[in-house]
Length: 263
View 1: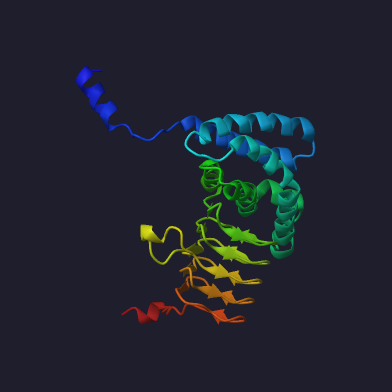
View 2: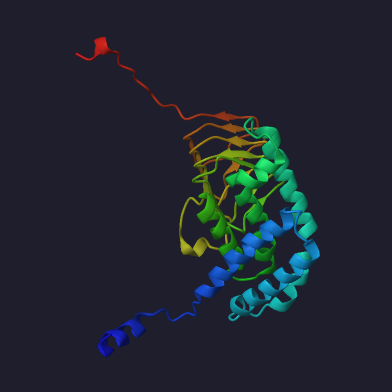
């Protein structure tokens, strides 16, 4: 390579520290963590010790530009594993009870992309709360790449959450979802505006308990609240609140022409 070209490339490289090894290590750690917690054929104590070593490698890279005490994060994280595991089991029960196609918990744990994305979110969310940079976001992006379901680790999601099918689901950072909520593929819980100065404001909607949101519905805005026991029909577009026990439908006109009408 010509020296002139090499010098130009060096000048164009990002000025911030970027190490793709962090992304690779996080993806490996995330996959192993899911397997260790849910595969009862593995020796839990030994595997957790091995994961501790993997996590230490992660924080060595992730904490280069932060003042938090990353060496303390693992012990905090392990302490909340029982709580995380209990939440994930409730999500699995919700899928089993809600989806007529679900035959067993084994099927849900092994084959349901919606459940997998929720489980990785559950595992990433405490790290987001601890203030660990990048790692929780990389964890949920790993699930995003595997499933097409984009859940920001900062979202607050209650118990018994079920995503059916799931492809194209987007759940933004400041979204609040209460208990027993069910959503379908293509649902967006997003921000109404994208102004950078709103970064620290609540930008995404609140979904109260026992709400069902059908495919491709879009709900936007930090002040938008979907009341409990509401049903949001497919392809609906909402930027305002809806009271409890509502039914919201998108009205579309479909015209069917028979052979005799085509003249």
